[in-house]
Image 1: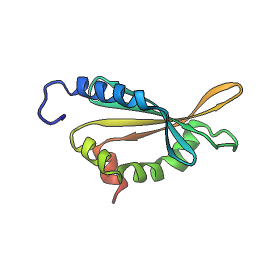
Image 2 (image 1 turned 180 degrees about the vertical axis):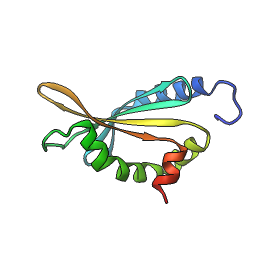
Image 3 (image 1 turned 90 degrees about the horizontal axis):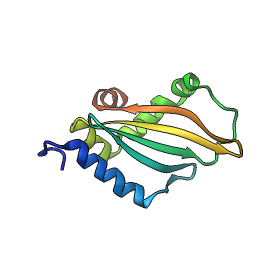
Image 4 (image 1 turned 45 degrees about the vertical axis):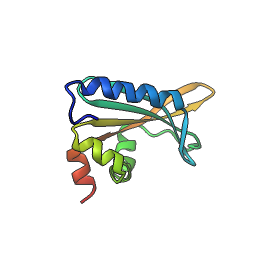
Length: 121
């Protein structure tokens, strides 16, 4: 769909709207996809909720040091992600927690073609 179009951002926007209509989606036993947002320039932001995280809150730097690389490997191994990155789409996976006091951003995982090339070596 993206390969032969002059308007990839409108296609990504439409895909996010369709996905958002089906949300939330349980990704695994600890993660729920809550929102998809397209950003001009062939970028997609996915907002995910860590549903069972009860540990101490990590600061953003600790999250990226401890969890970003393994998450990048897992995300980049997905065939759909591979196709999107080859088409020049970049993604950010924003991990959030929710409790009685509200939401808190835990960390972000960035995905693009160079990151996936490194992550899958």
